[in-house]
Image (cartoon, rainbow, N blue to C red; front, top):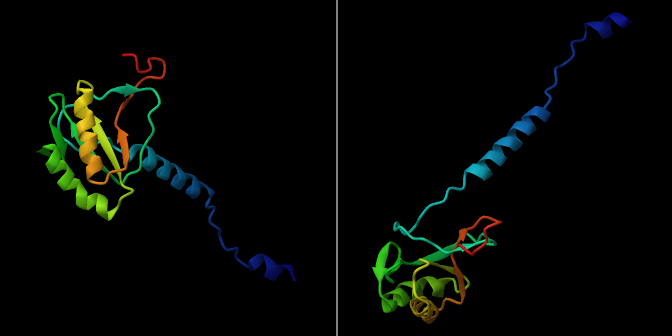
Amino acid sequence: MFENHRKKKRLGHVIITPLIDVMFYLVAFLLVFGTFRTETTGMPMELPRAATPSDLAREHIIVAIDSSGRIYHDERVMVDGELTAALLPKLRANPDRLVIIKADKSVTYERLIQAIDAIRMAGGAHLALAVERASQSGGAGR
């Protein structure tokens, strides 16, 4: 009676807990190190610093203003009227799209307002100013 029980081979089972741990670490690694900072404009800019910047949505339009006041969009130099014409079809297709302005910290306030006006004439209602993250202790007073 006990012989039949002993002769039965037990099927091996797979413990998946270590596999789940490895997959979790792999996903965490990809999330942390998979987001690389890329410069879309290809020009050296010194952005203002802020201690409390927030990350923005991925689907956005970037407009850059360099230290001499030139406006760049899609890696091309544009005047205000060209910027409005270039942004118009993009913002008509998606009026809630965010427009991020990367302005060098030496850009005059007047030039920044001119760029904002050109963006708003194209229908841009959601604007954000790009900043670099400052150290928590240093703040924006650099």
